[in-house]
Each structure stands twice: as C-alpha cells, then as structure tokens.
Amino acid sequence: MTVVTPPVTPVRLFIGPVNYAGQGYAWARAVEQNLDEVGAVSMAYTGIGEFGFPVDQSVPATGYVLSKTWQREQAEAVASGFTHVMAEAERHLFGRVYDQSVEDQLRALEAAGVRVCMLAHGSDIRLPSRHAAAEPLSPFRDGEWQMTEQLEREARKNRALLEELGYPVFVSTLGLLPDVPDGAEWLPVVVDPSRWAPGAEILQRNVPVILHAPSRGLVKGSALIDPVLQRMHDDGEIVYRRVSGIPAHEMPAAIREADLVLDQFRIGDYGVAACEAMLAERLVVSHVTEDVRNQVLTRTGRALPILQATPATLQAVIRQALSEPEQSRALAREGRNFALDFHDGRRSAAVLAKFLITNEQGTS
Image (cartoon, rainbow, N blue to C red):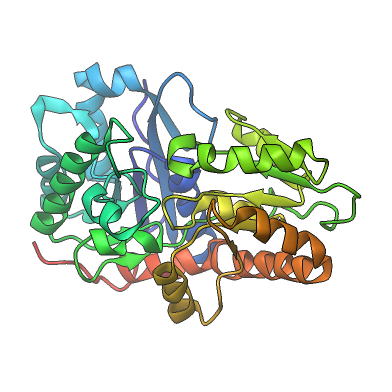
C-alpha cells in the first residue's frame, strides 16, 4: 500500500477515512474547483461490497486495520504534507496505530500545526433515543433494528468526542443538527451536474415509472411502502421498480428512466440520493420533517422541492402528482434548480472556506 501524496497548493486538505456516498471525494473536488490555492485529497478504507464511489486514495480495509508500517507512514505524510484535515464520522484516520485513540491521532496532527475539523455523516452521530422520541416512523422504535443499542452507544461516545475536542464540526444533512454541539455548520452534500443530467421530461408515458432504490431498506422504510406500490403496479396504475445493490456508475441511468423517485420514509431528512434525483429533474417523494424543511427555508430562502409523503399518505400523494402533470413537472424543474444552487459544490466550498481560509478554529 502507498501513502498519500499531498497537493502542491498552499492550502492542502486531507479528508478521510470513510467517503460515504462518495462525499469525501465530492467535497475535495468542490474546494479545488471553487477556492483559489486549495488542493484536497480524499481517502477511504474499502472492502468487499463497496458501491464503487470515486476516491483519491483507496486503502484496503485489512491494511488500514493491520499494517503498522502503513499506519505510521500515512500519519507522518498527513502531518507533514497537509495544512488541514477533515476527520469523517469520528473514525480513526490511520487505523489503530500503536493503539492510539481517535483523539490521540487528531491531537497529534494539531500539535504538528495541522488544523482539524470534524464531519458527522449520519448514523455515527444520530442519537436513536432522541430520534425515536421525535419521529413516529423512526426505525429505532420498539426494538425493530437490532443495531439500535450499539448505535446509541456509538452516537453518545462520538458526541462526547466532539465536545471534548472542540474542533469545528460540520454535518452533511440538516437533520443531524440536534445531535451535535452548538455551533456546528451544515456542509451540503455535493452532486455532480455532469453525471446527473436530466432525462426525458417526466410524466409523458401512459403508465409512469416509479423508482425506489434504497441503500438500506429498513432505514429507508421500504417495507412500509412496498405493499402500496406493488398494489398500484398490479392494478396497472404505475410501473414500480424496486432496485438495490446497483453500482454507483449505473445509478444515473436508472434514475433518468423514472418519473418519480421515492427516497426515504423513516429518517425525516434528505441527503445524497434525493439530491441526485432532483438534479436529474425527477420528482422526488419522501418524508422530510417540518423542522428540516424550516431549516432549509431559513438557510436558503427556498422551500425544499421534495413532495411530502408518509407511508399512510403515499398512494394519495402519488395519485395527485400523476393527476397534475404540469405542476409535477414544475416541481421537478425546481428540484433541479435547487440542487444546482445548493448541492453542486459551490455552497459547500463557501462553507469550508471559513475553515480553510479565514483561520477560524475551535478551542480545545
């Protein structure tokens, strides 16, 4: 395994070690393309079953965990070659070299003069007990998900780490703000307009195609909506396509072939999948809480162009959308405009500029 090679720019950002949904790579490109004199490298440990998201430095998970030589050399390369680090999901940047804690690794970088920030992605910081109390559809209720207790422990530990470190904290989605320390900032997810060009205008066929492509069915609420959609499919109202495990490079074509894209119905937030479908000018239907929608309106001045539905209202919402094709097309167009304005990388680069350029650092 090779160690990371730093950029040659004055400001050099290292992002790792998870690259969930390709976002580490996307944020790296966003700052390079929109900020002067900034270079960035994304790193992730990878294993069997990955979805093939692009990343600058891919490290086999076995080496990340077991290779003391690589761990030591990678840590030295980052400490000596980068000016800034974004640590994702409260994970060890360099494996468990010398049994160091996450805090040990980040403090060592700070001591070497590297500025550090933290990025919370989702399940690493979302507190199941809080979510279950606030969200009737939460997957963390009633012992339904066997990982709930483990996620609760990890989220509490990670929240304590963020508070102890005192570094700047970013969240990838607005629904995570209640779970992180005060002062955290929204770092919008980034989707590439060149990959997610619109397909044919929606709702031109006699029978519309509705797509649901969950990354994790239990969290997305797939079992709650499948019966509704299957009945509508069997009755000839729609063509329902339920897909999973599609490699990242095949997803744009699958999305473009649909009229409506159903995102998620249990978490109450929106993220990469919804933004990709909006950018492809598909009509997105999902459950997004009023709090998140109000956060969007406050921060962007725009209403979130995602059609609201729960499993109980989904059939009626779909039927109304199909009965009003012009309004549905207009909302799909607004979805693309929204994604271009806030999720093409420019907004994310502007947020990170405060950390990379203006020398705003949290206290430790």
